[in-house]
Length: 207
Length: 207
DNA sequence: TGTACATCAGTGAACGCGCGTTCACTGATGTAC
DNA sequence: TGTACATCAGTGAACGCGCGTTCACTGATGTAC
Image (cartoon, rainbow over all chains, first blue to last red; front, top):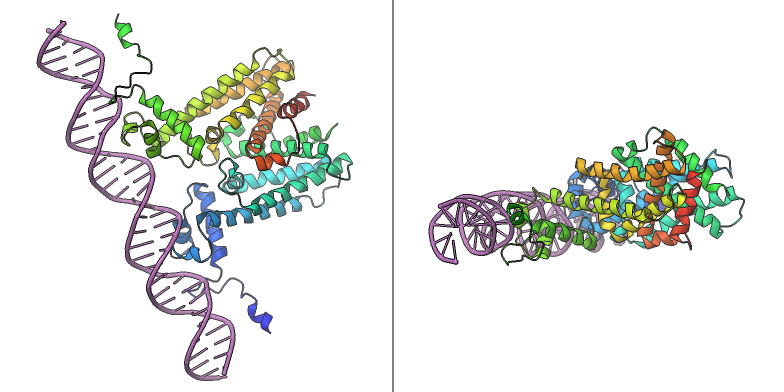
């Protein structure tokens, strides 16, 4: 009984005054704006406009602008991680194809959500250093490490596995960047992303 | 005689009112600020403050803020290109070591001038699409292609050479990113940058 | 060498703008009786 | 079921700020005579 009352009416409770789930609404608005105008073009005011709410409203849910962006990026990382796990389904365990599939998903995320992707790696300036972000990043990397270990016939993350995983990550990360800019992509000539990824996986997993 | 008069007194003509070479001064100020506060923290006003000049002065030399940044980034690309050429000196022609040397220089630039490096690849948002930038980028990439061709025993840039070059670039670019953030670098365990680069060069140049 | 003049790099004050954030408020909601 | 009340999500007006850019100006410089 009491629990039933606490359960959220899920979404459509837009009463005009109360929003229902403004926190989620603002995060989504933030995401859209970051994709549309780039990570730097985003402003709190814009997000409020898009969410149809006064400029003071966000401060009931977020401490400040940084917290708003961090929340959005964190959600993005969770999404990215889930995508990568899904990408593994049906691919034979212990084969380089699994590493390729992870790479492909990584690249796809970068291409589909370039703004969020960028913010995830704002690293140069240390604006976004929420420990939750750090954690989520490590979690995602550990997916790669596990697959590399399986391919190499290791039962644990040896230094060699870690090193290969890091190199694969470097490659895929850089590739994502170059692919995000058509002018740069053009410099690679004609190629299939999947071919490139599987080529590299094989090379990096060989002895 | 006439030419002698046109030759610049090179630098030290700070008369108080006239600056000598404000254009260069502003570009340098821009560079410093971009490194100090990150690509987004930069403002024209800041640059003026740093150069010791009124906020209106830049508009005698640049159309607007974007042109100022573009000029600075273009200089950075020239510097990067020269560094890479220098890095080849004394390294035996046709060996993977040359490719490794180029990669090392690429990484070093990213680590020494992270702000400029970032701006060079602002690509996601197409803020900086000066054709001169595009050209400079292609020029730098062609250095890599030439070395790859030599290593592969080719006399011209075949599709295969281009593809390998592009993959090497992807790797080195991604590595630069990960190395720029200590938290990400840590995930790779213990390693020497040179070892990683030469490892990859060998793998990517093998048949 | 000395003077008159054109040039134009740099001034400083001002502009309009959108931003992030705050404030006292209001009205919709859920709960206790 | 009906009423009184506490809660707190969202309002709207206002703030101070630094920004990019403009304007009419000024004064240092190089050149012509």
